[in-house]
Length: 102
Image (cartoon, rainbow, N blue to C red; front, side, top):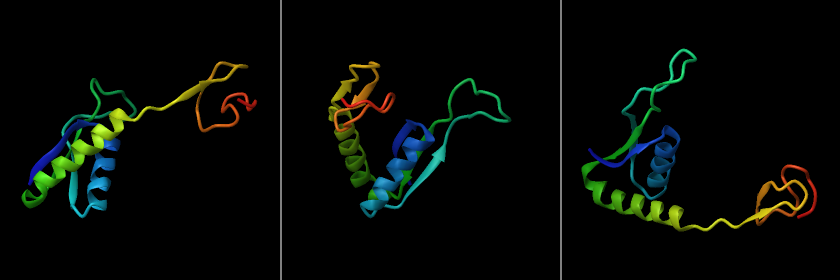
């Protein structure tokens, strides 16, 4: 087993694992930190890692890197509502906050 993603939240790690599974790579999410317990807030958030079989490690790393590059280079255009100034994705026709037309 080899680690292909580290230091992300449980949600991020699960998304990476699902992405790898869609590409035919079996992945496991393992927690490496301490999260909140008993309603208290942890000193640091729980961190998770994604591990794959040795034979899939190189391809898994390439897929994870390409996914991260795609996410970080995506430009999300937002519109500011002229009535309430809430930010809205450019695909919205009405403001999510005040429901007025953008």
